[in-house]
Image (cartoon, rainbow, N blue to C red; front, side, top):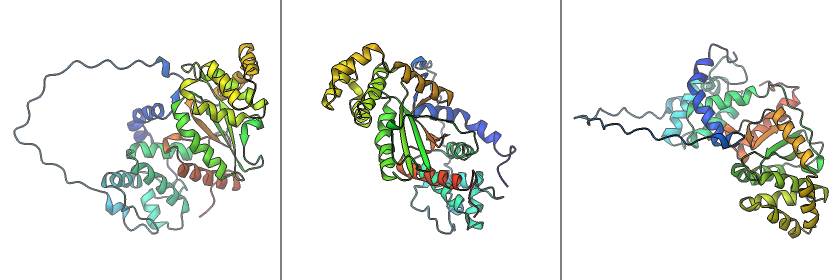
Length: 332
């Protein structure tokens, strides 16, 4: 039995605010510049302390739910993470569509490889301190994304690395001054370089309005592309993200053996402004709201599951399986 409308709405409503906050916490948002810091609340009189503190509830690690799962051992997780993971296994259904909760599927439907992969994702997030409610919503969004309409993203091949015939194309929209993009860059580039036959990785500048130097930096990257050094300039700009004035960008071109004077002329003339706008329009049409935004074969990657090599490997395996089975999961 797949998840039905009777199962999910109440749970999603309970965690909608938490998910919204998580979305803005892991990316640079297009609307960040409009946000104002909250005003401090007026102090309230302190309530008198109770004469006798109430007894503390006995802690529960959720061990009974997590124990006895063939081929899986969650005993190394901290007690708090075990409690959160136990809630996920109790409240969430396996995405393969079997009529069980995820925990029941792991114990009773032992041939289901999908449930095991789902549980590993949940365990990783629980170990990182993420609440069960947030894990459940992120998992639901992640698996729903496979059935959602795919985006058509046309990128200049000189802005891509890996085999052009690879079964999976990853497209990242990034901003050179976005700190989250800078943190994610070595992870996604390293992942792409480890999987050159499986993944074609394309990086597309998407300057956000609150990052004024991201605009000339994006144009400089495309200028360097036409000189045969897109990735060299891409990495140099990220490594100098705190000082991307026009003069410094031109100096970076000189350090790469390019003619900085030519780059300065191109920036002054806005030679690459129209092309950059084309990519921004493509990102807006794909409904991205911040950076980094990553797509697997036109499917938006759910960053709330984490931005690390393990999660990227997991979603690559899922995407490969989905494509190999003509937009469906392989039968267990």
